[in-house]
Image (tube, rainbow, N blue to C red; front, side, top):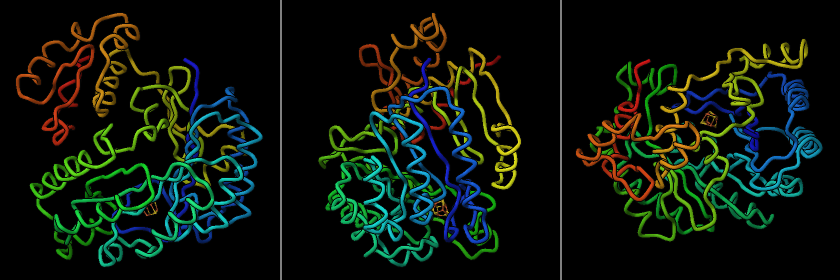
Length: 374
Ligand code: SF4
C-alpha cells in the first residue's frame, strides 16, 4: 500500500482547556524551536514524497509564532509535494490575518477551527482562550486570505448546556461562510480539570438522554441544511468532506510525525515517544522516535475495517472488504450483521453495510459486536 497522507503533531497550547485529554503541553518554557527541528529531521526520513493529504494538528499549530510557522511550512514544502487537501488546525483567537495569509502562501487550503460553542459563558467554562467575536474575525481572515475550505468544531453535551444553547451555536455556525462542521459530545476524561471538578462535586454533567437528544437534533438540523452527514460526527457541503480523515476511516496508511503521534506504514502501526523532550532526544540520537509498533493480525485488520468504515455514512463496502482480505464480509461477520440488522442498528444497501440513525447514537456498542475472538 502506498502512503499518501501525513499527520504532523504540534503539541503546544497557550492555555489548557478544562476538558482536554489530548496530547498537549502548556507552551511556556517548552523547547518549541528544537521541536520543530526534530520534526523536520523525522520528516526527512519519510520514503514517500508525493502526498494527497497533509494534516497539521495538535495541540494548537497556530500557537507557534510566525517565524516558527514559516520554518515548518517551508520545510514541509521542500520535503513533500502535496497534491490535494492541506489542513491546519487553528484556534480562533490565534488565526490572525498575518498567520492565515502565511499558511495560504505555503499552500494550506483547509482550516479546521476549534470553536466548540458560541456561548460566552460556556467558552469560559471550557477554559477556551477565544471570545465569540474571535470566531467571526478568524473565519473572515481565512476567507479574505482565500482559504477554500473552512471547518468548525462544535461540542455538545456540555455542563450547563441546554438543547436550545446547542441549537443556537449550530445556527450561528450555519450562517457563516464555512463548508464543514464536526460536532462531538463531551466525554469526561480522567486527568482533566473537568474530571477533578466533577469528583469534588463542583461540576454537574447533563444526563445521557439529553446528550442523545442533542445528537439527534444535530443530525436532523444538518440534514435539513446545505450540509450532508458523511460520518458519525462530520457534516460537509458537497465537495468539502475531509479527505484526510477518510484515510483513517478507510483504514489506509499514513505517516504520523511528532511527539506521541501515531502512524500506519508498510502494514505496521506505530506510536512515537512522548513527551516533547524525550522525542527531541530520540530524534537527535537516531533520527527516529518510535516507542511502540505492531503489525495488526488479519483478525485485527478486519475488525478495524468494520469499526472505522461503519463511522462513515456510506458504510463498509463488501466488495472492497473481499478484495482486501480474500474472504467475504459475510463469511466473517455474517451472523453479527444479521443480528444488528434485526435490531434496527444496521442496514444493507447494495454492496454496503451501514449504521442506521439509531445505530449511530450507540455506535460504540455496535462496533464492539465486531470484535473477533482470536
Ligand atoms: S486548545 Fe485543543 S489541544 Fe489545546 S488544551 Fe484546548 S482542547 Fe486541548
